[in-house]
Length: 125
Image (cartoon, rainbow, N blue to C red; front, side):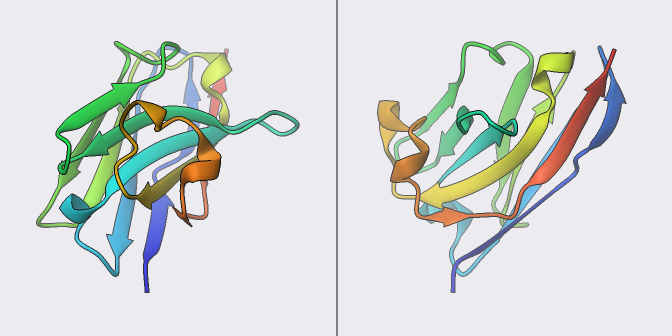
């Protein structure tokens, strides 16, 4: 059974950093693509970042590029999202998702089959 467990969210001041983790089970992290999404209540889920060892790609949304870094640890079967210089507009519930590599279509949440439960990131001014 494929499962994803996201954690690491919390309250941080603007300009601060957080590191999110997505522990995956039921598959090897380098056998699937993993993406991070975020969602603010009342708004659509937004693609944040993507990593895949299969196609060797990493992608970032324009809103986080240069501030967020996605990485994976195969030994721990975990994907990370290092977030720096956080801004109030980064406040959201962050989700990790897994599926086959979608390449440049990665940011469409409807394509992703497996989802973690979400972790709340709150950035205060």
